Image (cartoon, rainbow, N blue to C red):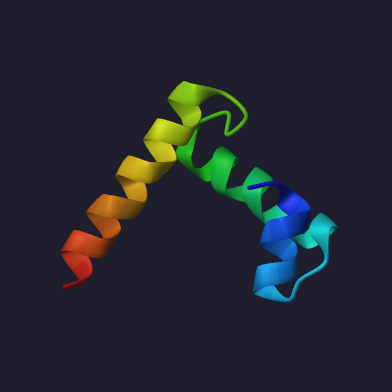
Length: 53
């Protein structure tokens, strides 16, 4: 899914989605445009969900 599609689904402007992705990438220390960075983000989200329950 592209940023514009994501923005539409979240009812946000595409630049807001881009900025938030950059912030998440900086926080995780990962490049979210690379497969390894996306994997790291997915793992972080999964751990967060597991700890939340």
